[in-house]
Amino acid sequence: MGNELIEIEEYRDLKDKFDSMTKYYLSLIEEKEDLLFKEKVFLEAKYLSIFGYLIKQKLQREIDLRRIKKKISLIQFYLNKGEKVDKERVEEKLEEEMKLFKFQMEDFKERLSDSKKLIESPTLTDEEYNEVKSIFRKLAKKLHPDLNKTLTEREMNLWNRTLEAYNCNDLETLRLLANILIEEIEVERISSLELLKNKIQDLSSKIDCILEEITNNKEQFPLNIKDKILDNEWVSEEIDSYKKVITQLEEAIKSYSAFLKGIEEES
Image 1: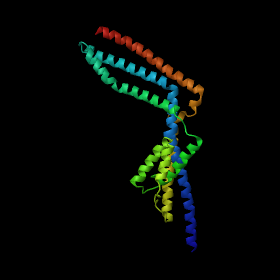
Image 2: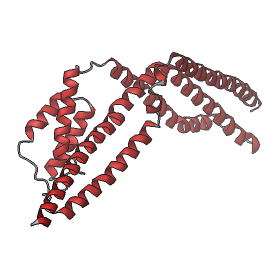
Image 3: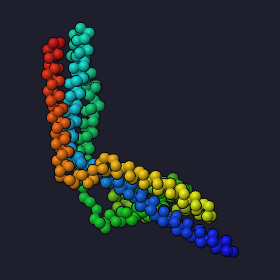
């Protein structure tokens, strides 16, 4: 009888520990989602809103310089063989080579436009934001695959929709998903000390992994400039740095353009 009481007490302690770890793990999941799909996205948009026009200039100068260098290379190919330069073929090859870079420019313009919309988009009130987090925690506890091993296809679809809605701060969809989840999801019942210990060990490993992910993400751009982007001195230095690179590119374009003009006259 004494051993049974000791086991019951140990089970209760472990169950409390498991519940506490589960709560902590859910908070880490929330933090990770916030970092990657809210804070990171906003910081990228903020960075582009400040430096986007310079990045666009830099990218355009890089494309222009690459085009000139490629044209020089194509013309020299003919000159080295002692042949007449096929100007039409040169232009065709140039257009073919530059397709990817034109695509990059269009993609960047689209990102600039999206960042402007994001910065200017309306934000949730504090009350609505807290409700978003509250509903997400409840749904995550019932639907997160790491905490529920026997999810049905329907439940996995609900979880994916939950993530998408949370990352977009879509309160209405989260409310809808909470209402849809009428039936309780049957979580595997912990019926023994050994099983409970295994679950705690498994959850501990998951906590270590997500903590490492969060730390690594915080060290990467743009999360690593979270404080810097509010520093006017840092912003000014970054602007000067971009302008310096743009000037260097313009000087290179001028130099290579002069060389190109010379070999075009030669050909």
